Every structure is written in C-alpha cells, then in structure tokens.
Image 1 (cartoon, one colour):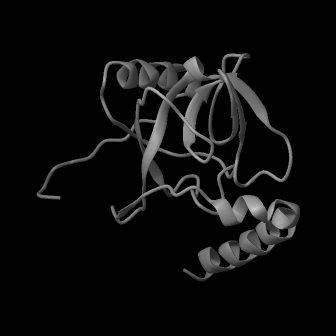
Image 2 (image 1 turned 135 degrees about the vertical axis):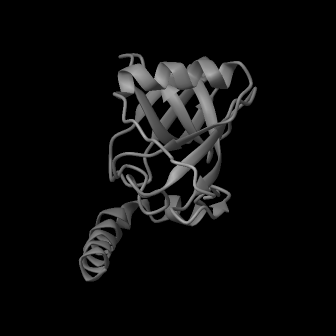
Length: 153
C-alpha cells in the first residue's frame, strides 16, 4: 500500500455483527475477516475474508450470515429452504444444523477473499454435500495437513 497505515480493531461479534447487518440492509457490501473453523475447507477462519451483500432471496447452497433465534450470528451454508424456514450447516461441521427464517439472513457471501487479496466465488459445494457421510475423515485429514503446512512455514 502506498504508505497508508492500515488499522485493525477486533470487536466482539455481539457488537460488530448487528452493525454489519444494518450496513447490509442499507445496501452496502461488507467485507469481514472470518473466525472459526465451521466453514472449512472452503473458508479458513482467521485467514480468509468474505464479501457479503444483501439479496432479496436465498437458495440452498448459498453461504449466508444469519441471526439465529438465540440472537447470535453464524456464517453457514443453506442446506434447505422450506417456505420461509431455512436449515443451515457449516461445511466444516460433521453434524448439527441451525434453523432460522429468511428474514433473519443479513447477507449472502458473494466472494471469498484470500489473504493475498485474490477473490473467488463461494460456489455451491455440491460434491462436498454429497460426501457428508465421509466429512469427519476428510476434515480430520485436512486439519492435519493444514497444521503441518502452517508449522513448516
């Protein structure tokens, strides 16, 4: 960057994500650095960012930022849409789903941003969904390889 100083401040999700939802509702795109491993292997927490945009509708396969009934937010993939009810699950989760309503979706991921700034579309992960019975083993292997690569670097 041309001599510009970039400042980062980490805010608790309880403070940050309602503000992100308000910006998305106002029509702004928002880019967030992700946390956690629930979207492995497609989104790596602490390394990848996501660019979000508010759309009038969501469909199975979309990755969304949604407010759950308990008030917390998750960034997970839509498994099923049944009328206004959505079932969500993280790609890095081997079981367990969340439920919300379509009006609880703050935004949809339009791009995954790698640490070097390259962007790629989020994709629908159709093959990954088909491998759901094998996820536990595939994720374990991925985590071992990924940790090994990080230690080498």
